[in-house]
Length: 353
Image 1: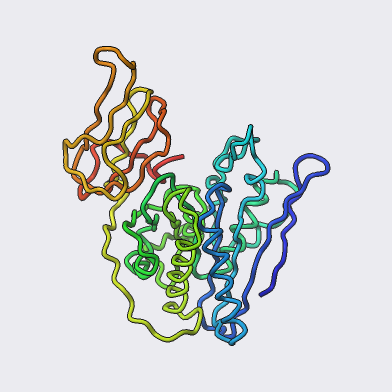
Image 2: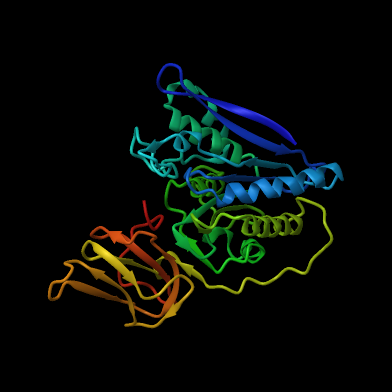
C-alpha cells in the first residue's frame, strides 16, 4: 500500500490541510480501477470506519498478490470541514467561509478536460482546490464510490439511472434496503463524475455508461459507527470488488437486490409545518399506509389545539428520520420511499441542499 499526502494551502498565512491518499497497485492492466472516498461531509464517519477495515483486508490481499485492479482510497476526504468546530459542535457539511455544501459546486466538465482540474490551482480558494483534487483522482478510475451517511437512516444509495440496473450488484453486496434513482442533474461529487463520462464527447450526452459506476452510498445514520457494522460493510464491499474483478477471491454466487429502486420523484419528504417538539409515532424501516399518523408536533405546549398531527401522504417505506426533537418550520422530518410519485413538485437534482 502506497500512502501519500496532498497538501492544500490554507487561505490565510500559516495554515494548510493534509489529505492522505492510500493506493493499491493492481497487477492486471485490464481490470477495472476503483476510487473510494469517505467523510466528504466531515462528520459522516461510518465510511471512514468501513475503509479502515477494508484496508486491512486489502493489505493481506496485496501480500498474496490478489489485487488485480488499481484501488485509490481517501478515507477522510474533507480535512477542512473536520476542523470546523463551533462551541463543541462539528460543522462539516458546509464550508463556513463560502456557506457552500462541501458536496456541491464540483466542476462539471468533460472527461477530456480532466487535466484542467489541477492546472493553476493557486487561483482557487482551499475548498475549491480540495474539490478539484478529489474529482481529478476520481476521474482516473472506472468505478467511484462516495461514502456518506444520513441522520437516522436505513442503508441506501443514490444511483444515476445511467448506471442502473448494472449497479444492483453493489446494492446487493452492501445489503442496501433501497436505491434512489437520480437524474444526474446537480453538481454533487458523484454526479459531477457521471457528467464527465456522459459528456466524453462535448455536446453529446450518453444515456448509459456500461462498465462505469459513480454512486453516493448512505451508510445508515451518523451514530451507526461500531466495529461490527464497519466490518460487515467492509466484507460487503470486498464481495463487490471480487465480483467486479478488482480483487481475486473464491467466486460467490451473487445475491439479488431485493429492495425498492425508486426515482427521486417517488420520495415523500415530510416537513414540519410549524416549529416545536416532535413526537414520532413511526421509525425507519417501518412500512406505513396512506393517512397513518407519522408524528405529532407540539407547537404550543399545554394549550388547546397546541399540537399538529402529520399523516403519511401515501403508502411507503420510511427511509430516513431526523434525530432532532426540537424542529424548525419547514424542517425535514422523514423521507418515505413510495411506489408512486409525490404530489409535491421537485426541482431537478438532489433532494436536499
